[in-house]
Amino acid sequence: MRNPAGLLVLLLATAPALAFAQAKDDPFKSFPTVSQPQKMPKLNSFSPTLPGASTSGPTVRDVRLDALLKEKGGPVEQGLIWRVFSPIPGSDGKLPLVATAQGGSASFQLVPGEYFVNVAFGRAGATRKIRVPESGAIDRQSLILDAGGVMLNAVSGNDMRIPRGELSFSIFSSDVKEDGERALVVADVKPETVVRLNSGTYHVVSNYGSVNAVIRADIQVEAGKLTEATIQHRAAKLTLKLVSEPGGEAIADTAWSILTSSGDVVSESVGAFPTLVLAEGEYTAIARNNEKIYQRNFTVSAGVNTDVEVLLSDSAPTAQAAANANAQD
Image: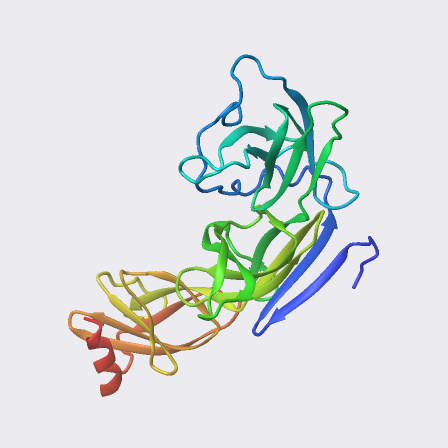
């Protein structure tokens, strides 16, 4: 749908995840602070001339290059990495690197001949073969990146903002390989970081904490636009305490095991008041202190951060729960 400002607003859902995505035209100022340059494996060191070229001052021509995010768009003014290769493989079978440049539009002094030109813009890139004539006019070469950007964030519950240090995103290809896995595009993306990508659909995995609060969503990246997507987690942050009475001081040297309603162990820790993030649901907290075991069932509600207190007076676990707890020792 479109809002009154004319921005494209998408609502993407992959149960139980919700991702609110907004794509808008970018003035090219949002992109420069983003993402690492595309990696180019197997490159040789800088080589100023083509293999076999004369070293006694060969004729060179001025070749000007620019890159566009989309057809009929304006040139990208910064954040580009240009690489020019000879099409003739060297003795090692690799294409020799002839020249490089960084920034926006580029100009290279090249001897007449053929070259491969690659331009990288974050994780997006384009490659073209060009020919430099010995005489005559040389048209300015424009490479179409067909690229945009995505900026990710997340909330817990309806609108509780999650601290930046507790969130991380991984971006995968939307295509599933034969082994059922997806190709990783970029890992450990921090919130509110613009990542430059070729246009298309990507599979985003959002991790809140380090236990089981994981949400997946598909995000569409459009050429020439910056997509801002907010993923909704159904999770909360909890602090565990073993106390002698409600609101009492936490007892040190306590070992903790957190079990799901089906009895699976999802977290283990030791401390007076460990903090963890859990997905919405039913759990059992098992505390072990001075060779005694205590337990309490509790519920996690999305966006409701709270303390989970286990009392010394809480009933002892069942034989099966005790066996599960002892099995973790």
